[in-house]
Image (cartoon, rainbow, N blue to C red; front, side, top):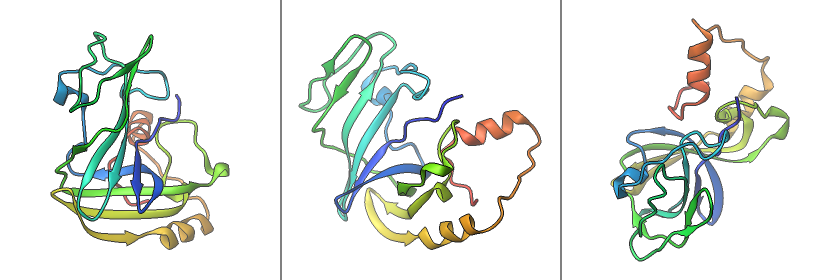
Length: 178
């Protein structure tokens, strides 16, 4: 198993990993008729995005994907930059009318790297939960101190009913309390 690429969110001029989401998916290439397939073992989804979050809007700014049929279409005014196995889109300006909560993180602690799925919130020094309504920030909760406290305690061994459930959770962005 391989650690997965995170989507990126630019917030307050800083780059964050998107490490959790409650609500609908922010974006999927199928909205434009594209069918993603695995890009490589670090991107089972077949695509990854860069978003920008401001007080006024959540925007898709970049996209890299591998389409099952090499069907790379124009998004807005942006043509894809194609190479042999994938295409990239830069300078996108697609408004995302998302309502829900996202978890942003930066300042990853290398010693806590896990070589499977997405990294745990406690593996980052800076963690924010952002509540969004119709693409606009409603409120921001700084969870950095909570993650620091989790790192201070002894590692908790969570028993799972099966290895399959453990793996499923590792590859999910569903926001669960650690």
